[in-house]
Length: 411
Image (cartoon, rainbow, N blue to C red; front, side, top):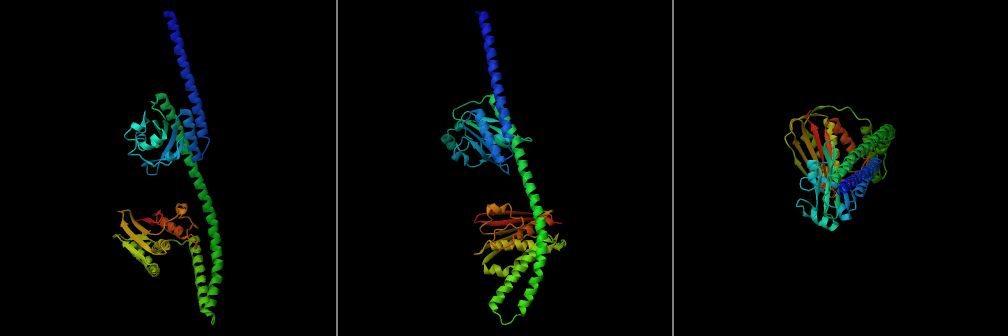
């Protein structure tokens, strides 16, 4: 009996080892297939969906979700979900500093819970109960020593995740982080290629615009001179013709300014004074539209800059602000000294804001939200600021207005 028991024990041990090896082989096989499918696409949205789908299948879980850090690294945003309802997908972002899952980002280590409904730091407990979420395993998506997000799996019953499952999910997360970075790099390359193509097109358009502008300007000047010598014609019609010719002339001038920029003339200038001069040119229109102008100037030392170009830039931004408030509003202009290196100018309006679809492209040429116009104003502003080695940023909210923030170096 002792001999038989010893042999039986060895057989059982071998069988367990065989089961463990077979299970490990299955896991590695599935992991290989997961990695193959994950790295087989460079489309970020499709990649994220594939990650959660494959992970949920491999781990046999109720819900799998993938969350990525926002630009400020303060919040986690759900980017893909497998098995969750619409309520789960639309839940608010998680603050890293306040949430249970946020600990994974801060520590860079996996975190598990047998029952999240009993965790004090877990956000959205009501949602977890309604979704039937119980045990949680969350692992970080690590890239170059930093967490770029988290990969979560949920089971619907209390469950203690064993070490091998934690390691398995961690392996998937490591693969996923690399694939996500590759997809992001691919997107950036595509954006750069698109920009290069746009620049090439703009170069050709600039040359064409210069030629067309020169060809149009000569007959316009002749027509304008002949109209001024006409007598006995309808005064109202004559005035309309003159206004339309002047409008075309201004468009031609803008095209020429854009396609054939002049060399900047650097001189000592007062930013506050240049802003006042720009607003003075708009005084009549400001009164007509019943715009309230608020100024908040700080004492700023003189700058070395091309005052004509900066005046034109400030004028264009102020004109855009007036266009955004046809029925009245508030135009706010402020300056501040940022220390030894730079100064700041802010121009704000209380208009309807810039539509999200054009906000990211607002500084590109021929992009406009107006019915009339070439869409060159902000492009000219952006170029003028860049020529002074400065920066310009825009913030806009629907029905709350738009703010342009310009930073200029002292010299």
